[in-house]
Length: 187
Image (cartoon, rainbow, N blue to C red; front, side, top):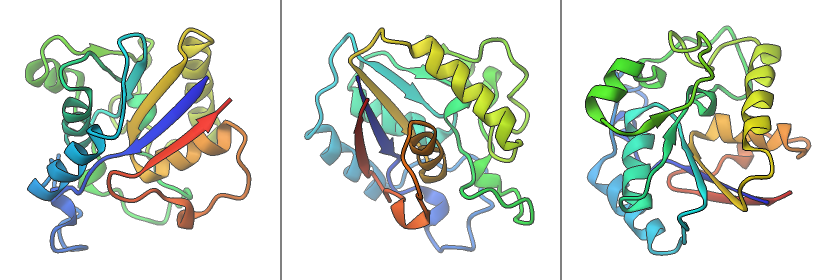
């Protein structure tokens, strides 16, 4: 089984950084769309692969470009999540997730995976580590051994948390992928 973690492309909230971090639901910039289009040309996603996407506009736009019309699943269990956790830092508007109603209105037939858990108000960004690990364990159990490749299109912090949960040690912010970055992990 292979996990392919993909960080979204350059987002609108990163223009005039850090002054626009409180932009609600930023999408990809034209440069971000270009980055992701380039990435699509380097990737192969097969019909039997699983593509999980964070419920933010910039990750959904990234998924739409990368999958080139193939189905993907939106789940609050894949981000965004701050890394490392620091309750002293403010909750930024750019990290607010789209609601289920917004996802349904904007992306009609896209499947949503949430196990009917109440995790939509603030997502997984600032929840306690043990709660996050419970959600992540449930997601990983659901994935099981059903897929050869799992693509997770998310955010640097979330990707780093999942890499740790899947067995990597001593990760720091220096291990972040950056815009349209990819990290492959064989289990």
